[in-house]
Length: 405
Image (cartoon, rainbow, N blue to C red; front, side):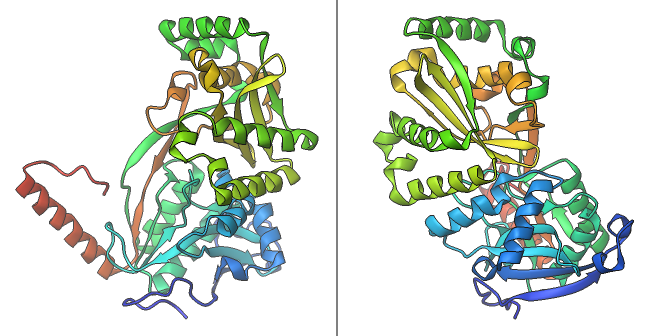
């Protein structure tokens, strides 16, 4: 059953559309592995084989994304009580191999598109969306995905935190163009990342201004008054429990405790975090970076690993050392220690908002966008009316629109 235009169900019945893979996807593969099916199913109906295929796909995806990993999505859906049930749409070969996957919610409409459509499934802890897709299968998967969307009653697809460049984004947009789906880029922004293998003291010096370099040295000397400051990167399963408890404690100090927004302040949030860490740790995909003074941890970041990348998920620091900027120091020392401690990672995504302090010490940037894809004539007409209404509103207000397209 597909959703009707008037009242889409939150979760449709499982559906499948069979297509034949094309181009690169069929090269060098047996006949049993070149027929691709696009399938759609609510998360709670996912069986063990799908979960295993999904996890393997997350490890080898062209675009690493810890927030599309089952080790993130399953704890989030279980503990965070999302308003919408996650809807999985994936590509599967006739041999049962999962080669592409996206996670959505079915919505009746949004300010950007007042018609039933798919929107990327989000939580308050989601910092990246898009798709997982295996190298060599992107063209076939996205061709099939757009065929599936255009044959459904959904009028479009809305992503909120999608990579704006790279192979996944390129293939997604190319496939949309081939099938006649109109793309609106929407809001674009950048956030900081670091490439550990290109780090070191010289890289930090090149990335920071003279004023900030002096500030880092001065605050490091403040830490030396308390003992010997150093950084540790903890991956050993035997230490993960201790590191988890330490980060929860540190994040609950200071303003987050007073505002009641820390993970430890909410039982559901705390259980989500502990479940998430346990799942990532079970697959050796978690790294705690910790700033210590002697044996006391004064700042901690938990990094979720997916494929060849890590994502700096949560930061906690001790406000007793506020003058020494422990969070800032930890991010700076991550650059310094990158070549020796984190050389197995292609990059670490800061998951930070634009304008974050991390931009002063992490030199690289990645581009993100919030694209809207219009898959029907009705959606293109509706979007035209939305644009016209905004133009008219701004005319009467006497100011140009600054809303995302």
